[in-house]
Length: 251
Ligand code: SAH
Image (cartoon, rainbow, N blue to C red):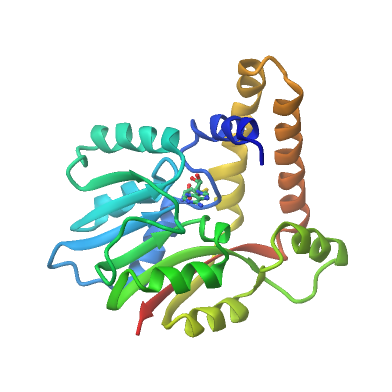
């Protein structure tokens, strides 16, 4: 992806509450499945936090210090503003870094959170790498694109084999978790509302302003077209794939 394209995609998403499918209810359900005893202050990292939808829920619910990591500084700037507005500046530390090499001490975290982001490394590579930042007995809660059925149109399989060949079923991802040194504690798949109401509909509402801001440039139009085809693909195939939320304990 060219730097110009990345800058435009960031600009399209910077005003969003979230940068991928999910909802506060999903974050709360995943947190309940963590069954955390919240007596002492926890050390948490939210990796690929975007503008911080999940980070703010975690800061509200937990007695925790949260390192919020993303490589897009404009997203972190929004998160900083939102954290200040909620009075969470002392509990959320935004850090601009890559998820491949985050500035985290080995075996220092009680919990790694990551919604809609680990695919950038691949589920297995991400979990193996992040395992080394989590204390033994600590937790990971991560959402990952997941096949909901083995019975699906060939064209859909072909699309995803191009876009993200590592996509697999929940069973496949649970095996990857176990191989990376985790024990599954909970799983659920995101409902349609977490895609349409929470993510795609607000994105479409912002689209005209985005095109105006970029004087209807060819690149802005191609980004709009790509988002529209992604939404169509989801609408037509929502029974076949979703994000799965995996909650697991480091052994
Ligand atoms: N967790 C947020 C954002 C999901 S979108 C939410 O659910 O709303 C994926 C996020 O990962 C984006 O914010 C993007 O900037 C970030 N990202 C992508 N590749 C990354 C990398 N290699 N290192 C760090 N952050 C990355």
